[in-house]
Image (cartoon, rainbow, N blue to C red; front, top):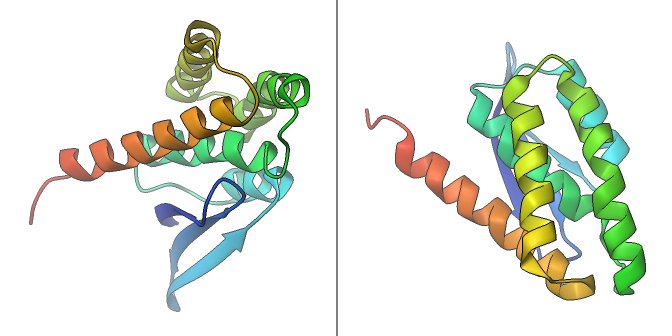
Length: 136
């Protein structure tokens, strides 16, 4: 079960998933979108909001190392169906990818600025998730 997600590094960073199984907690570092989607398919998530944060970081993984605006734009637009395939029946994940598509369209940003926007959105959603978790 995936219990936490984090982005390690700058724009060209990587996703770090915390997994919990019968042996205890472990970290899995992921630096490719395909590995992220396959992990999302194979593992349960502690809650839907964690799936959303993980998916936004998937956009960031897909555009790592790319600065040319035309390529960044194409990649972030094409990654949404791939990310949705991780949980094909998840309405919240579908709604998230639609919301991110609108954020991209309305921002007017491209290239590195778009990558920065997506990473900031992932961090914002992670912070919001943490604030919404019950204290106990």
